[in-house]
Amino acid sequence: MRNAFLRGLLQHAASDPKIILLTGDLGFGVLDEFERTLPRQYLNAGVAEQNMTAVATGLALEGHTVFTYSIGNFPTLRCLEQLRNDTFYHEANVKIVSVGGGFSYGQLGMSHHATEDLSIMRALPGVTVCAPGSAYETSCLLDAIVAMRGPAYLRLERSAPGFADQSPPECEFGKARMLRDGSACTLIASGGVLAEVIAAADCLAALGTPCRVLSMHTLKPLDREAIAAAAAETCAICTIEENTVNGGLGGAVAETCLELATRPRRFLRLGIRDAYTSVVGDQAYLRRVTGIDRDGIVASVTDLLR
Amino acid sequence: MADIIAVLYGRVLNLRADEPKWPDRDRFILSKGHAGAGVYAALAERGFFDVERLQGHYANGSVFSGHVSHKSIPGVELSTGSLGHGLGVACGMAYAAELAGRQHRIFVVLSDGECDEGSNWEAIHFAGHHRLGRLLAIVDYNKIQSLKATESTLGLEPFAEKWRSFRWDVTEVDGHDHAALANALEAERPTTSAPLCVLAHTTKGKGISFMENSVLWHYRTARGTELDAALEELERAI
Image 1 (tube, chains in turn orange, blue):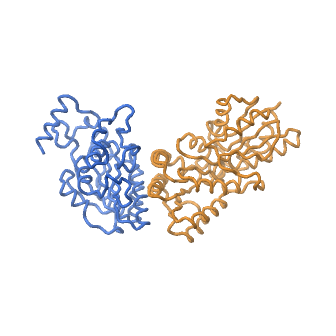
Image 2 (cartoon, chains in turn brown, orange):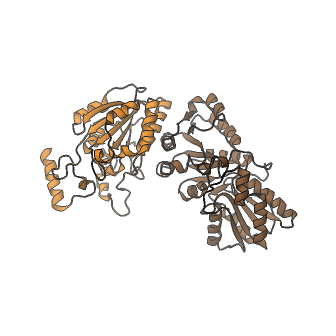
Image 3 (tube, helix red, strand yellow):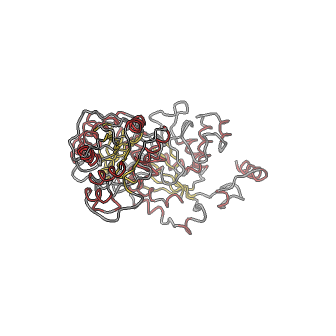
């Protein structure tokens, strides 16, 4: 995902000199090509995310399209008020990119677990929130947020997903992508955990429980129609996110179902249960202990449908 | 503070009231957004909008918030209020001017108490490193912050030395001396020089005997006989 983003950004920036990439002193090795190719469009703002975000806003108010780049919670929570008051309130054309969503940096400890950012960013007015589930979706959403004016948050993960994703189905901004179909349950995922969800759906299908899989790569604006259809056409909805279940994807889907009066017959949110993760491990391990790996999802969905 | 705004809007800032977004205008950011009333008044006096609109200040349904806001108010570059936001955005504007080779300048007014905010020091660090010579920070140094004196809260001294150690040039002036302020703000400087900090030594509530150096008037609004007395003292001084 990270590489797809950087490849795409370099292409866009090469043809649009108004695009500027700011990093908060992170991206060892992977930003070299951008810096070498477009030195006037690259700036290391240092270990100072509040100022990086403020500088990005100032540049954007002067007509630039600015990407702020960092990992984990640093470009979001660390500078949340600069995002709210400066970037979002002024509708500044700043795109916030965090590499290392969820447990991407699992071994580094809770400070580097980005596990509430989707909920928090989603709560703020004036920002688009995207969490692509594959390199293909990353490229498509990057194109979309470059084309639109105004703030956007792009939550990425470092590593490649565990499934070969490509078009079709096409990835369209603001529209859920249906990657599997089945009537037993709809599995809705945001972010890189999509790979686990696809694997889980394939297991469930083999067990005689065919599921629909929706990649909700755009969390805001949310594809309410796809959610309503899932509630009406399938027997249950299960949301899966590498994020707290409080106010993230699961919350958004639940709110939508209740407001549209299309309550699913059964409903389950999978994600991190109102706690910080104090044990470390790689992403696969932490997904497993959180119950959002393939086997955990299969077990939870089987229970839900029992 | 009012003197600083008067000198900026009365003399220093290169602006066009009939073209608020003129690309070559000087940018002005009030980082101490709580003094927004002064900026609204200055903009009205310079013809950005009708003076009558000032009656909406603090009123229900009005866009004239206590902390300065840009929405629907021509001439305001940046909405502020929470302290420690203006200088960083100004750094971005100055950096953009540098990239574009434009000659306009970016002025920011900060309070002294505001310099407790770490985000300001991130911005000061950035501007000094990048030699943002188009950037001027003016500190309204009245030595009083929200509850008590700055020195008994979080001492700023040696204040000028702090800025200099972050690679800024510093000029200290009497913040009520219009000629001295104008002299400091209008001095010719190369755009690639160090940014300039003007430490404007001021007296809170200057010119109104019962308000001077009183933290009460950070919060209190003069009404009735108090307002009459304050206006009388100001009129007498002019």
